[in-house]
Amino acid sequence: MLDLEQLEEGQQVYIIYRNPHTQTVSTIQEATIARDPMNPAELSLLLFDFYHPIEADDAIFRSFEEAEATFEQFYM
Image (cartoon, rainbow, N blue to C red; front, side, top):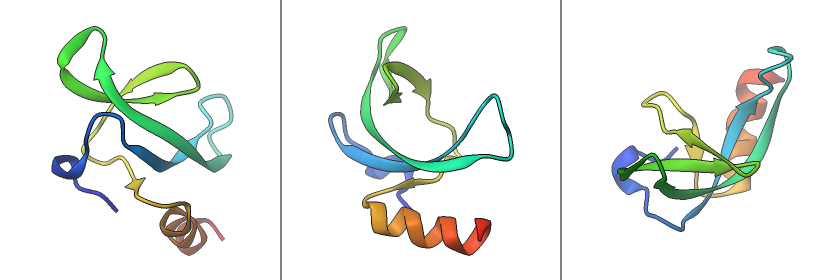
């Protein structure tokens, strides 16, 4: 899992994303690290054409394989 200090603008990452409409459904999604348009001093996750603030407890991974291993450990 990546630390917040390791994130760079333009970086492709993978996250474990919980469906906001169905809390029991989670998937691995690819996202891009981007400048937050509302606060350009901060980075955010660009996912599904929306900017999401990065939280300290977000599970952000370098590769799909890393995300998948963690996903299987906690969800399977």
